Image (cartoon, rainbow, N blue to C red):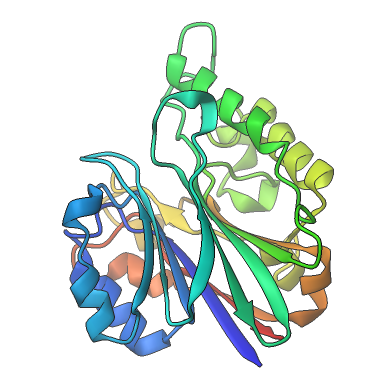
Length: 267
């Protein structure tokens, strides 16, 4: 059975609803996981998604900040919303779906960006990010018997040298500092996760999912970072058929600074 999941930090689901609808009509993933929806639950645009064939929606939102949503053609159950670091932020959502012969737990995550100063002693936002990473170490790809796992989202860390436009220039920039990259690799290793994007597109090929709004010509400058991720339990590696990073979406009308990442499986 073909199965497709996409992840996209949309930077306000209501503001950018037209390009989300365009994406869904064109690519028709079975599931789309959105981050940074910036939308309280009671204002989420359910009707728009139902009208184009996505009747199953789980949300974890808050006004003006953060927020995640999982939008699906397929029914799901066992919705879980975890409060990382016990601060009340809407940064995690998971659902369980059946696809082909597999039951899959799908985690949708928005990791804190961490501010500008990579020093937890003077920057509470960076301290929060490191604490969030520490709690992620408890997330196991094999956490439920008989259930596979996929973890997607804006994880706000580019772990490898080939995940940034300049390893040397970004070593002291939040998202690519050693404490972050080593922490993420620890989460992947200890949790038994496979970095599916890098299985499909191995290092040393450059791979970016984010380009700053600050660049006058983001495409020509191409100073990107891979901040968005698709991980999976080991049993899904052989089922992976491809990864597509939709770079063109960065140039759409009123774009997010992130682009969709699409993972295709044959289950």
